[in-house]
Length: 111
Picture 1 (cartoon, rainbow, N blue to C red):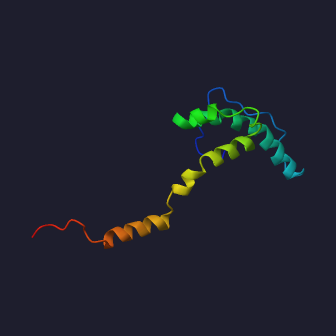
Picture 2: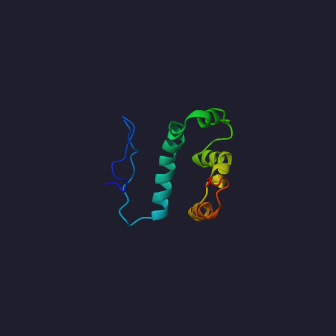
Picture 3: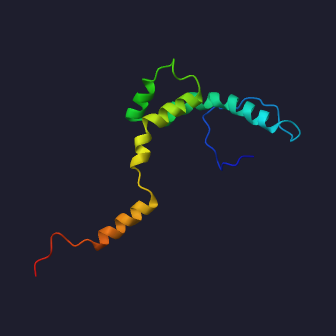
């Protein structure tokens, strides 16, 4: 059973063995243990999602500074935060569309 429909997993992928949660023990401890075990998969498979200059950036990261998924995620977000800053939101795009409809044609057609 999965919330994700038709997940694509690498060949021979196996999840760690976990003590099953039955709703009677500490839920915070369960989610923390699960996250810490799965975190190893995140940090070891993230490079498979990168290409080009981004993959080159990843390969140049200092192994002494990246010790966890959190370190890697923070380095990635810092490096590529400018991409988020450039992406226009829906309102900006709608305003751009409205402006383009109201601007006069700088090259009027000859009559």
